[in-house]
Length: 207
Image (cartoon, rainbow, N blue to C red; front, side, top):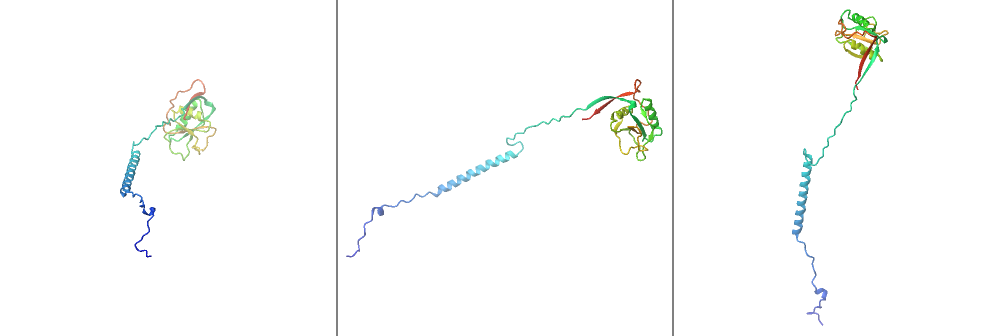
């Protein structure tokens, strides 16, 4: 028997139509991309604005604190001591080029109770001095201050090396007056002590 004109009946599964997954419209993807890009732009704008605000003078919420530093400086110390005039010896060296001025000053200081060695000239390498300086050996600072007061408050300084006398020596002296033109040939104006061979000396130590 021939098979033409006969077809096998389909099962129920074959007859049931297949479901296809719903397709996502492409417009949704495009919208999401636009939204994300817009959000990114806004975030970038706000971040950039905050950075520029912080960098500008006075911008942002920068807190500036003023710190006051107080330097503590120790006060100068002033002390008064009594110097016995005969406890040290003085040497006068003439650096003023005024003839006889060192001898004159030597006699005046001797008349005030000081022990002063015979006057000398300054060394040959010492130039003419316009200002008088009283030099001292270590430990004779107060004695030098007393002599400086007698001369009207001239400067004092540690003894230089070499010693600026024509002999290069001090003998027994611990104080040297290098006589300049400001004092040479002029009488001393400080009061002459009359009671005792001692003088009060005020020294100030700079902190």
